[in-house]
Length: 186
Picture 1: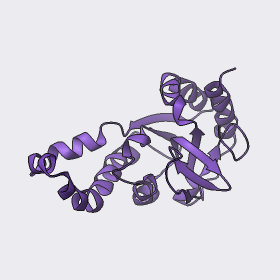
Picture 2 (picture 1 turned 180 degrees about the vertical axis):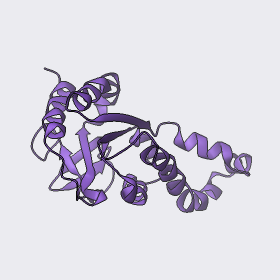
Picture 3 (picture 1 turned 90 degrees about the vertical axis):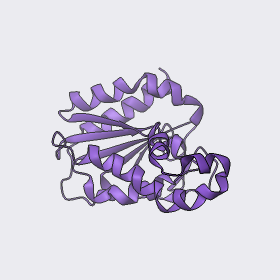
């Protein structure tokens, strides 16, 4: 069995268990943690997670962050200036982009077809790296999670600490981790 299939089985076991309904938004998040080198394999096998969700009686909705930065950048009035002088992009990146990314996700989380029995699956979070922290974006949407938010996270989870792409200092988060090795990902 491949590592992605094993993660899907662990996810299946978790998502099929009865859901507590009175949890805070931070506790409604599930991080499926895998090695960044497995990103393409995971994307090719997302249907395993979708099938596990549907078979357990829940609905599935997905959101991909991959094109979010490009959509944001294309809307900027001074985008040509930023290409000529990228250092000028620092302030809008810090002050505007995390909120834009959060609002893109919020549109899915608050859609008419999303309810307390829906899993919203988020992938492509590595494309936020260098532009916005995943934790800052998720912090903006915790109140909008109706069912469960599953974040496919290419990185590491160790000692209750998540590290995106293994390249940054991580952050401690209340999300439920699904890993291959009980708290340590490979």
